[in-house]
Image (tube, rainbow, N blue to C red; front, side, top):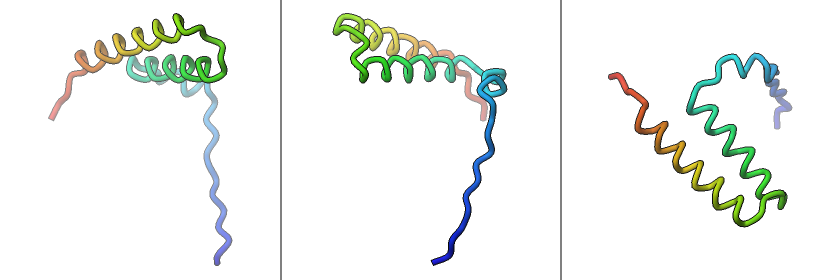
Length: 69
């Protein structure tokens, strides 16, 4: 077996944030909400509201994306 090195380029989160768009922002918020829910930081009520807000935002984003082709 060959020993190969895999190097990943580090990108500062501040640089990454400069290219933030609406779908990306929704994904970040949903990821943070999922992490909070997994850690037990959210009540059941909060989890339901976050899930509903996520669905609402996802539907909004998906209905407003203009595809070209």
